[in-house]
Amino acid sequence: MQKEKYFCQTTYSTVKIEESKIVSFNKVDHTSTSFRVYKDGFVGVHYQQGKISDKEGYALAEKNLELQRPYPFKLEGGKRSRDKKRKILSDAELMSKTKSILAYLTKTYPDFIYSGTVYAQNETDAQKNSAGMDYSTTDGHNGIEISFKHKKSKDINNGYFSVNLRNWSTKTIKEIADNYLANYSTKVKFPKDCIIMMPTWELTGMLKQSLNAENLALGTSLLSGKVGEKVFSDKLTVSHNVSDSKMWMNTFWDADGIVHKGDKLTFISKGKILRGYADKRIADKYNVECTGSAWQDFQDIPKNGWMSCTLKETGKTPKEILEEAGKQYAILPLLYSGGGFKEDGTYAMPVQASYLTDGEKILGLLPPFTMRSNMFDMFGKDLIGVSKYTKIWNKNMILVKMERGKL
Image 1 (tube, rainbow, N blue to C red):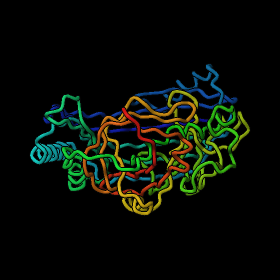
Image 2 (tube, one colour):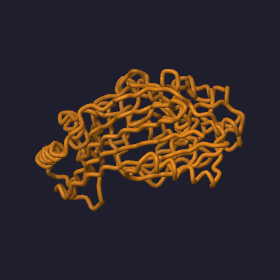
Image 3 (cartoon, rainbow, N blue to C red):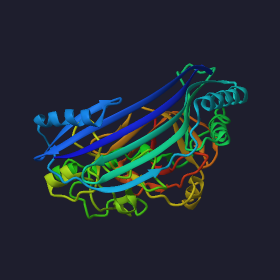
Image 4 (cartoon, rainbow, N blue to C red):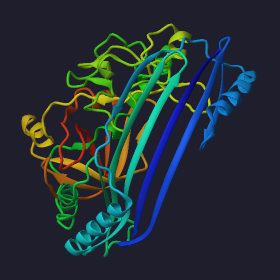
């Protein structure tokens, strides 16, 4: 009989803002543990919120072996720890910074009403077992999420911006706020080309789903039968990447205990599909490559799907990507809902509000419209590029040509 334990401890402090006023402070200190006992190809699991002794936790897990959850796989060993946490604000600092930012917003841009949260989070994740595994990671960040509404508007809100930083920077937050708010009242026309600029994760959901090895094997993926083929643009390389430079609030190991060389594994290289992602269970079931893609289910066996879907960057800023493509402007969606990908890969999204940008500076507000594309064009002929991280956007951005329709 072997034993294993998942552990997660999170401390999360938030200051809430409503109608340009601080209305509450909340702090949560949450500990979760999953005790796991393996015997004769089965695993007994006990999930515990809060503290409990290891002796009691493992005893409860052993009792649950009678449920016969199958897990016939060898446990992995290995020792390693990682700490990416920098300067996380104390509760007093968090309140002080919130007051300072709110005062700046209301004084500099008094035509808006602000709501949202300012928060600080610490998290430690660990996994240990009797086969010699002892992995842990600690991370944390400070963040601000602000929605804004013009005082003359009848809408619930008119826009939104967020900033997440391991080291708090009032200067960076003010610069981002300035970019989003200064030219809101400037009305501009659509550029000739509809080049959409968004955070990468906003458009990769269907692509990630299509790389699920189980879907590929069952023929239900849009990429079924295409492994080994070049399907997308040379500009598209997709990896699971949890290396030091790319990881964010994540572990470097999967729930089956697998660690990738260099903490990354490529699934699409220059448009060519190399593999789908599979945990030990899916790899065994469909006789495909195990890619170490199990996420921790604290109440059950591991589940397939731990894949960061990181897009390789060009090393250029959004503005430089536009200039290289011979373009001057991009459209930055601000409020969008009511659409997305369909099963056949087509994409349509109503955009209630958006900005015109040169890739660096927001130039003004555009009329509502609908953006349309499909997964194969989006990551194929219409992919302009993926930017590097830039402070003014606080993230990597993907630039894609789409069709523009009426809302």
